[in-house]
Length: 267
Image (cartoon, rainbow, N blue to C red; front, side, top):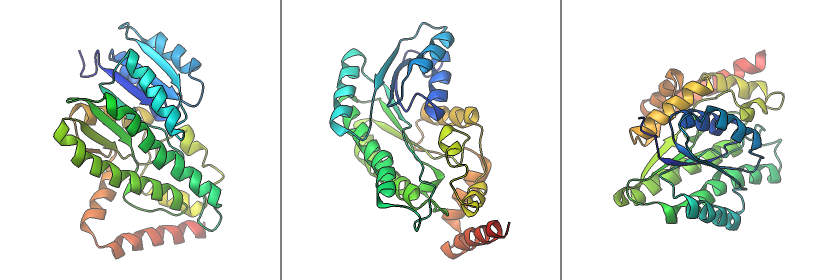
């Protein structure tokens, strides 16, 4: 039996990307899955059923995380059927535009989905969490460092990092453990949508952190949840950047970033 066998795991953003990959790995380990997404989950359900060799339960719910009232209702309905042992929140979008090119509506949409959506999910699940339960929220390396073309995205992820640190102080004494998953770029529909939109300078800065295979990133995240770690940063390059941010002066970090931008713009 694995750590997740027979545990009920709520997964938001389960229709694609990291959420879908997480669901696939967990169903193989015998976790009971409760899936949420604004996108249709029919294909996701079909795939998971084909992998469900341990006869775990799978439930699906349509969810728009920006609608706080609807999110609260959907989680209450789901919890009435199966109370969560673990919440894994993956919903998010990027905002691959420079500040000068971005409209207010574009900026607000990134903040609304990434930050307020995360807040709405946490508030909706909180009444159903008890001692021993866990929460995993997806942040990003952009929670710790800005990047060219990521002013809206970094703003949302910096805020999530601060919110989750604060919640850890509040919920840890109650026996609820929090994990923050902060990966470097991963090849998902989210990052694929940036192709042709993000400037070359932004692409160049992202390459500094390296790119992970989605399967490996999820394995690292699940191991971190199993060990009840607060922060999971997968990948060698991402961890080197994290250490650099901790031990080197800001002017040094900014010099590396500015140099990367200059080199990218010459290409």
